[in-house]
Image 1 (spheres, rainbow, N blue to C red):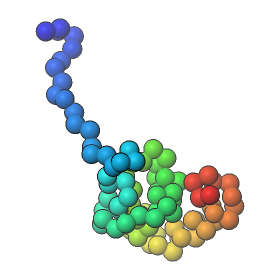
Image 2 (cartoon, rainbow, N blue to C red; image 1 turned 90 degrees about the horizontal axis):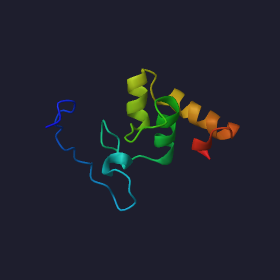
Image 3 (tube, rainbow, N blue to C red; image 1 turned 90 degrees about the vertical axis):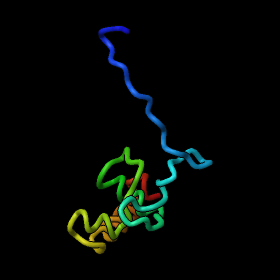
Image 4 (cartoon, one colour; image 1 turned 135 degrees about the horizontal axis):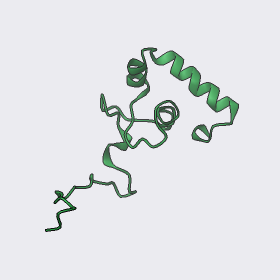
Length: 88
């Protein structure tokens, strides 16, 4: 055994759907609700572009402490501005 490398346990990859996306990518990671495109887009815009699991608008609003209304306003703003590719 090489003294510079420690033995690592094999890691398992999450199950994938036929389209290659992780199985949990289409449901809210907190409540399990089905996600729409806007749910994923606003999560990626506000939290992380590299996200692979998402929160629905209600759970995201609860996490951010602002509720659903302000998040829907942001979605409307980004969609109407046309500048964000996530909302096209």
